[in-house]
Length: 138
Image (tube, rainbow, N blue to C red):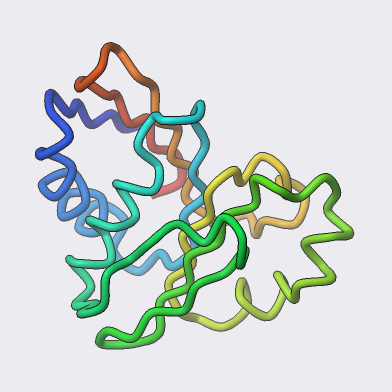
């Protein structure tokens, strides 16, 4: 398991660059962590690294946002889902099979639907600014 330490939230852009480099070729990133741990902020930084020009925002109510960069990027926030069946109903399988980047918040809600090669990113808050990213699957 790989770890990335982030001492301030401003360092998430460096962490995003490092994550994409370490996991080159991977397209599905499953983020877990408590509310406020920085999942959305990390995904915003990843989108910037991938050339997304529009502002990445949490799709809490829409469930899925699609961004245009060098290629489509899908940002899924599954917080409001209660079952894997609800994820299937929104077409999660199409997003996962698209070959495009898929950044999934609250991925533990669809753990059985994730492909075996998904990168798991657990974000742990150490204090108000400091985070530890535990990365598995690169």
